[in-house]
Length: 168
Image (cartoon, rainbow, N blue to C red; front, top):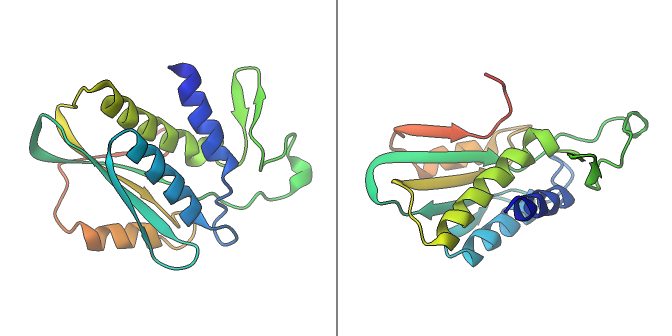
């Protein structure tokens, strides 16, 4: 189980999704395909040549509460490469830590959510509540993904889980 989660995180870190220079839609397509292979209803919506969100729904035993899980898929630029001790574009394992741009903010949160959703679906278990998942683009710059998600889902959510590593 842990090896599968690490493999997923490594794959996500290997997809370049620097906001403003890379095609974030590639990340959305990868996540969508991973969820579909697990049997989850998922689709992407492209907004332009570099931006797309992925939307998925995992039916639960009950659907009386609106539950949303959200993770953004883009990263900030690499910055000064000479300040990195590893190549930010290539996931590098050092001890039990994985280094690459986005490892913390926020491909680890994205990987955790996608892994859990796929694990639920693959096990045949259903969560207590239906979970709606949005992998959003353009969080680090203009917020296009969030704006488009709000347009798509105008109803209020009862609970929202965001995988951002804020420490509250």
